[in-house]
Each structure stands twice: as structure tokens, then as C-alpha cells.
Image (cartoon, rainbow, N blue to C red; front, side, top):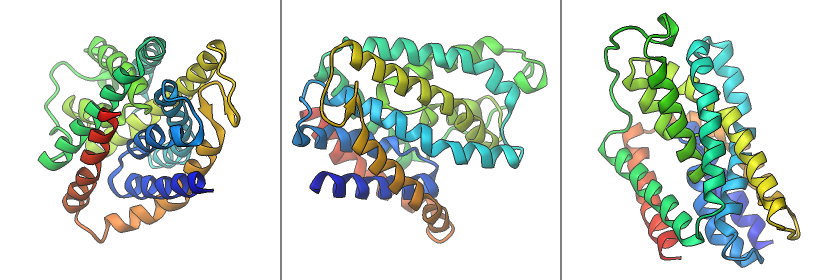
Length: 270
């Protein structure tokens, strides 16, 4: 019961942050799962991988409605999606394969480092400013497509290590290539959906390969946590969107950054 309350509370907070800041629930789900799962009987050495797999599944489910909404509004740049997606999928496949061979301490440090980086970006001002793109973009002629593929692959690898679709990195990457922020967020969300689906499937199957057979789990996917965090996040995301219209975004970001720092230090310390 205690675990369920923690996951429901964490999912609710993650949904609020997603709606208010556009920051994925992975920033809440991964550290929360990493800390709580050992209390629920998950071996400490497999808790980080279980956190990544479960977070990927949560993010995939909660992204569906967002992608559909952005598509209806015409914000998704599908040419960019088509150029980038295969490289991003290859990146998450490579990253998940590498992650399962790393010590638990190394994964904890990777997650903690990412959380500290995210907190720093939130305090310092967020995403990169849009730049003038020379030679066109995938939406105007696919010039420089190799840059998109390389960026997508690297962000896919990073996403596999943080249990997310990599939106925290993909949005500034696309914005820096000259895409308007609204379109960068929408396109990043569209790319992140199949990336997180593949990541969840891969981590689940790798867990089965490794002989992970724990109560309530399929491979590295923790079903109760997936349902509790996912449902709570989906329910509170609309309230977060309303909150964003009442509280300055800069204040929300700083408050969230303050929350991330002690979480990161706790995870790094094991």
C-alpha cells in the first residue's frame, strides 16, 4: 500500500510538471523508482534497469494523447520525424543493450548526472535559442539530414539511459536548428513516442533473457508501478497545463530544479 501511494503521488507530480513545463514524467519516475523499488523487494542491482524500463512504458503511454493533439494542430514537422526516427530507434536499441551490461552504480551515476544537468538548464534559462539554419532543413529540402540523424542517434542513446524519449535534449537540438519552439516540442514528442515504445519492449525482453522473474514484473517492467504512475500522470497533466497559465514558467522551473538536486545526490550515493 505504501508503494502504491508513493507511485500515485509521484505520477501526479510528474503529470503536473509535464503539463506545466513540458518536461517528461521520466524526470520524476526514474529517480522515484530507483529509490523505492528496493523497498518493494526488487534486487538493488536490477532496480535501475527496472526503473528505466517502467519509465519508458509510462512515457510512451502518456505521450499518445500529446502527439495526437499536436498533429491535429499541425505542429509536428513530419519530414523531420521521417529523417530522424530510424537513427533515434537505432540509438535507443544500442543504449539499452549497453545499459544492461553496466554496473548498477554506473547507471545510477548516469541518471544522477542527467538530473543535475536538467536542474542546471532550468535555473539558467532552458532550451537553446533558435538559430538561422543555412542550407535548409528536412522540411525545406533535407539539406543537413546527416546532422539530424546523428543528433537523433545520440539522443536515442541518452534516452535509453534516462528512461525517456530524450525530449529534454531533442527540443533544444531542434530549436537550435531553427525550428520554432512549438514545433520543436511537438516534433520531439512525436519522435519520442516510438522511441519509448521500443525502449520499453527492449528492456522488458532483455529482462526475460536475463531470467528476471519477480512478482508483478515482466522482465524489467514493473507492472504495478507502470499502472499507478501512468494513471496518476495522465489525470494530472491537464491541471499542470492550467497551472502554467497562472504561475510564471521561470518560477516553476526553479522550484522543480530545487527538487531534482537532492534526488540526484541521493541516487548517486546509492
